[in-house]
Amino acid sequence: MTALILQQIPWRGSRPVEFAALGGLVAMTSVVAYHTARKFLKVRKAVRASRSYALTVARPLSHLNWREAIAVSERYKESHLAAMILAALQCRERNMKLPPELLLKFMAQEMQSEVLTSHYREKEYSRVIEAIGASAPVVGAIGGSTVTLVYAVLLAIPAIWSGFYFRRMNERFETEEKNTANEFLLFFERSMTPIEGTLDVKSSG
Image (cartoon, rainbow, N blue to C red; front, side, top):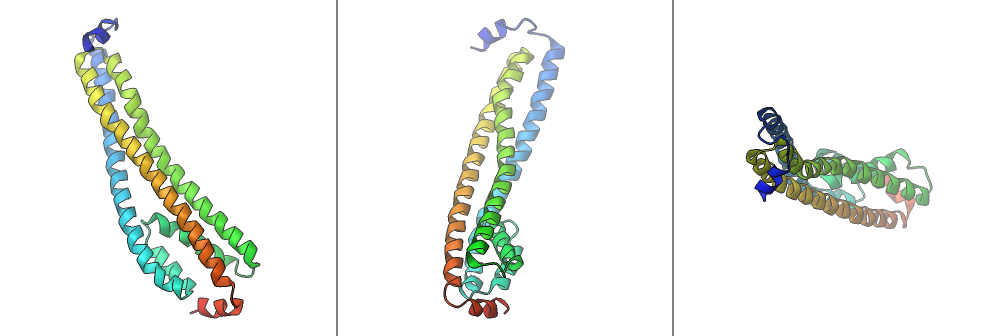
């Protein structure tokens, strides 16, 4: 197969073209390695931080201690759930005088905005990795040698798989955040139902 591909390349055997292609493949490898390592560590930290955050923030929320819940959320900067809940709690602090229905709407919008913003950034990284994986064989073919073709294939396979893995993890995080947002809004709505004045007293503690 490799021999058949190389036969179709008129400049095969050209050293300058081969070296240029190798240089491009090395640069692409560096980008894939950097983003893969960075995202893998970020995903692991986010999972661990979110598990710990869920347990820690449960207590102040159960006591309707909104300020303590904000303080806890601010400490868990690596948690994807904490960032979303923090946006909602800060929205509540800014708009406490609004009617309950409007306040819930604003909080939902803040959480939705946080989800869209964070996942747009993460999707861009996944797309870069997948794009490199898809274009690596083309660069290898342009190099016109067995070395560049083999190198390109060895780069393309893990790059495509890494991009796919991080895209699925991004979708998983997005689903978790949407489910958590719905549960939080339902909890918050129920907490406002009894006596509104009671909430103001507890929230100041």
